[in-house]
Structures are given as C-alpha cells and as structure tokens.
Length: 354
Image (cartoon, rainbow, N blue to C red; front, side, top):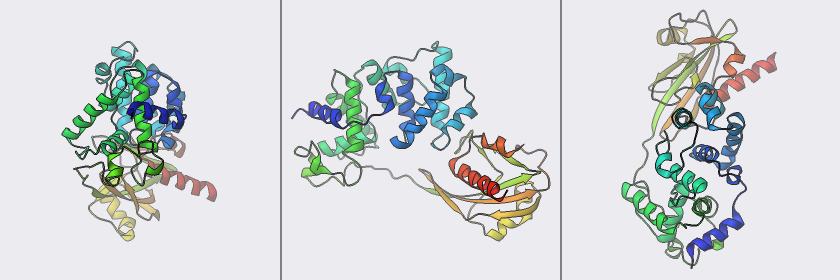
C-alpha cells in the first residue's frame, strides 16, 4: 500500500477545523505549536485566540510586559514556554528586524524551540522537507512498524526521526506532518484505539502481533517528589500580601501569597498558631479566619500538597519582598492556577457575604 497516500486521504476526510490550519503565518503557527505542547487542543484553542487577539504579531508580543504575557498564559502551566516565547519574540524584533526566520536551522536558534517545533514551522510555512516527530507520531510509527526502541532514548529519537524523514512527502510536507500528528491524536490514541476502523489495520505490526497496548516503549520513569506548601492569605487593612516568585523553580514570574514549605503535612492547629507564622514569615497574625482542606496539585514531577490559611495580620514585615495590594490589583496579577482558583473562590465568598 502507499503509506503517504493512505494517510493523506484519511487526513482530508477526518482533520479537525482548527484556527491555525487556516494560515501559513509563521508567528501564528509557532504560537500554536508552543501552546499545544503539554496542552489539549480543546484547552489550547481558547488560549490561541486570546494570544492572537492581544498580541496579533511578533512585535506586539515583544513589546508586552512579561507579567501581562504570564497573565494571558495563566492556567496553561509550564510557564517557561511563555517566557521563552517572549524572549524569542524580542530576539526576532530586535535582532532580525521583525522578520521571522524561514529555515529549519534558523528557526531552531529561537529560545525554547526544539527540533519538533522548528520542523513544524519550517514544513507548514515554508515547505521545507523536515519531519515532525511528537508523541503522537512516536506512537503511530512505533505501532505500525513494530519498533520497540524506547522513544525517550537518544537512539530511539534518532531512529524515529530517520524513519519519519523517509516517509515524508516532498510535495506539501507540512500537510503530511499535520496528517501524521492528527492520526496519532485521533485514531492511534494512547489507550484503547479502535483498530477495527483504522485504515492501516491490515498492515499494522502491533495489531497483527497483539502488541498495541505494549507500544511505544519508554525506558525512563519520572521520579515524583512530594512537597507541602502552606500559604498565608494575609489581609492587612483590606489589602493583601503577595510576592513574585523568582529563581529557577516552578512558577517563576508568577505571584503567590506568603509561603512556608514543610517536610510533611501540618495539622490545622499548627497552621492556626500565630507563633508559627511569626517565626517562619515574620508576620504577626491578629486572627485566623479559615484553614482549608489540603489540596493536591499534580505536576509532571511533583505532587504539591497545598494548604491555605486566611488570616488578618497586625502589620506587614517592613523589610520583606511582599507587596501590599488591594483585591482588584491582586486580580490582575498572574498566579499559578491552583492559587488562582482558591483566590477566586475566596473573593466569591466575600461577594456573597457582602
């Protein structure tokens, strides 16, 4: 059978009508690819519209404040993606006179852009014959050709890319790449694919050998660590204490409330103790209003056990890095989604009581 012809025929009949498929604008393709890393299409589409409306071109994105970009990104997670977008936009604007690079090699130089994203942009926008290999493509090729080389190994990544390079069509390589990704996303799905309706069912190695649930293979398992984060939603004369997270850990550039991280879960009584917050944060608590149930927020490599304590304080610490802001000002800042949900719920409670 003609693999490419069968795949493209399937794609033409089954592809989703997605906004970034109606353009060859490299800025918009780049934006969509970055958003869709670690993000479901349904969720990513709303963010794509929000970004293209607020930052319609690379120059507008370059000129934006990082806080505003992170606020627009709020809820997507993996915030380094947004910071890398901003850095690359500034590089294109300032160093390339606003002209988006047009070759795979040049696109690869942009901050945060790897082989997958560079190949997608180069093939879709500039008809460069560069194969795209993402999780969907790994899975499809592994099953169809019966490849058991771990997809997260150096050898596997090279092997799968070489295979994809042999398969890709010179005519409309961007369409071929999108078809490969779409097939993995819609037909050759991770769990319980409906192989009975698959156009490749007669020639698929995994289906013949009953190995669909065994392929692809991964060699590494991510070690998951547990952390306990205790937040004090500290109110002082109707205002609240917040600070920007810095450093290289999670949520850099986002905002949070005063935080004490512990090695294990604290009891509600411990969290209600004013001496605890004065010792750990230098904040004198006048009264504790509420202690939340622990929330577990799962990241790719961490389980965050989060507790919130609402309290009124006697005075903010003078030499601290916290800002004392009104509730409307807090609303405008970018927060990790788990903190944002708590804050919004808190504000809704206040509105209902008032």
